[in-house]
Amino acid sequence: MKTSLPSRGIYVITDGRTSRFVERVAEALSGGAAMIQYRDLTHDDARRADEARALASLCQGHGVPLVIDHDVALAAAVGADGVHLSQADGSPARVRAMLGPDAIVGASCYASAALASAAATAGASYVSFGAFYPSPTKPGAGRAPIELLHETRHLGIPRVAIGGISLDNGGLLVAAGAEFLAAVSAVFGADDPRLATVQLAALFQA
Image (cartoon, rainbow, N blue to C red; front, side):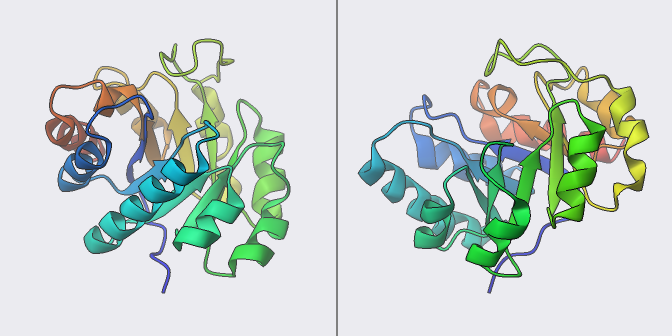
């Protein structure tokens, strides 16, 4: 049984450079993370499989969905709840056919309302936009204007804001309509990932 996509919250994306990897993800979950994405672009398949399985079990225990970045085969192998696609990874419809109708399928749409509309039509569960602010995780990422969130309210699926999000700027994105705030360094760069996640999640209650 797949864990369903929540309606809003903090979408924590893993940082493969983090020590105490699984423990720190557990801390983020205890702080109220709404969704976890396992992102590791290395080619250490054995380690990636072990980590993804550990996160799948951890997330299942918290009732929080686990999404795997890019790797549809890994998502299927570890029983993850879904996969996140770049524009180079293929159609959400094709991936959903591989993972099943209940799978969460996200799509990166950068700064393009047109790509988001196409992804929604193709069956994406959510779309992500960004980077809204300078990102320490992807320093060269293009920028998305905050107006994009206003322009895409009609899509009918959740929108994830990503890129340099912090306590200082995340509230602006929530106010503009973002259903999820994606966080990497704001959580894993913090001394206390649990507290960092609690504080970010509070932006949705303001």
